[in-house]
Image (cartoon, rainbow, N blue to C red):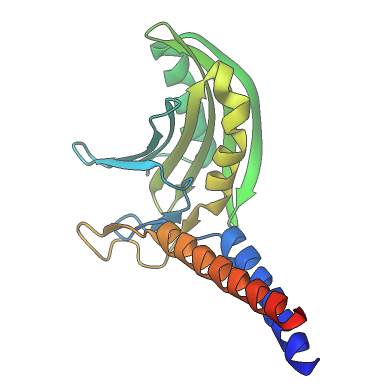
Length: 211
């Protein structure tokens, strides 16, 4: 009976491990040059473009034409609110049928920011975006989560999870390149598979004991 209790405890412990690792938030992307981390949705593709004064990063889901973009650029001429006003003016000028749906101030990771939700038409595509704007230490960070308007509600949880994971780090400006994709997703999957195997073996052993 004592052996059976130990096996049951191991079984419960394995279940707890699976739950912890499956739900554990991970910093899947870290940029040391611009000093931030963000957790994009698992398995999305990474694209980076540094061809102008700043940096443009995109996490893309090609299956449903959905993306999370991060624009980083120097902004020393005004406040967060000035930067937001400039962004809204630019959207209205450059995109057809731009319509601001919602806006509010937020605090994410201890940082003041401003959120915009809007629709627009681009190349005859009807899009909906959630955009969050930060200004910290003379740098503007613009996170834009966008999809076809018809798919927006299905992607909203992925968008929000990525947004609330955004953090500034203490290593801002310590590297000229300094970007890395930390692929913890496959490690997590491996641990889950290992725990499942352990559970199956335990169940088989329990069944043999009872026989």
